[in-house]
Image 1 (cartoon, rainbow, N blue to C red):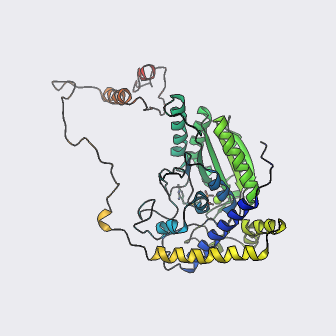
Image 2: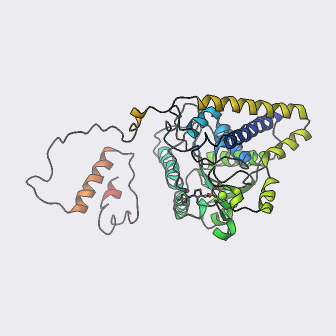
Length: 398
Ligand SMILES: Cc1ncc(C[n+]2csc(CCOP(=O)(O)OP(=O)(O)O)c2C)c(N)n1
Ligand SMILES: [Mg+2]
């Protein structure tokens, strides 16, 4: 796949550099305050370039499932460090989960921002529901339910370790079968906690994707901001136009600890740490900016400003109110309009119905009342509606 070749403006490179320094100052602040930052958290150190590029390019109508390491993607989308820190510290005003989930487990529907469905801590679990979002968008387009001025794209962010999970294969299979408008962004740091890539797999995600017919794929140096930006720009434009799936394989170093609780020194050698340090995206971009005529003083000022800004954000977050215990059960169940049984049970007179038929009738009621409903699963097909006839006639009717 060809990438765009035009050179990027100094403005965008400086914006990226500033946010890289923000992310670095955040990681350093968390590390220096481990007594306060006691809930487990990962930082984006090493992955900043590809994440910022992605965050900059997403549009408000798009959907994204960030990974737990994607704080720089959040900064790129426009979230303030303070907002992310509220979740880090489980504060009541955390805009994502009101203090209920770990750091960088966002879910939010905010005006003028890309939309984020609920995220889980089980690695790879985002693949199936996020692919479902792309399926929903395709359905909306086919049924002409919304006339999109900018056709939305969906991004599912994954680590290299998570791609070895069965759940991810299931999502890939579905995306190629239905040709869904989704980008699987794989950030490959060659580690899945303490398991190295050669212990876990014989191929990387780019090679693996070749087995899924109809999956486009592209490689990118995820530690180089310009390469990351041009590749993601090309990829996002391509999916907006083509409405087909693509996998982006971004090679990145892992500079921080796996999480605050899993220290790199436990299992990584000096050689490995030194090899990863060479690809730190910050110094790489700094060198490029100096070559482009930006002064050392200007870059130093950015670093100092971001450090001071992050310290201020942290102090504010530490002093933010704790969650109100009375709200603990809010949002556990959606309120239901059905609270009492009304109407007549069928069939009348206590006559019995085989269980599979009762299920079929219930599903049929849903499909009749909600034209937007989809029914799918193993052996749910149009021919006979499954060998137990649990979907009999539904394909023909709906
Ligand atoms: C299903 C599941 N298995 C195991 C874990 C524990 N775990 C958390 S992160 C992780 C490694 C994931 O590696 P990768 O996807 O490469 O992401 P990275 O942290 O390297 O960015 C594991 C095994 C988990 N959270 N969920
Ligand atoms: Mg990894």
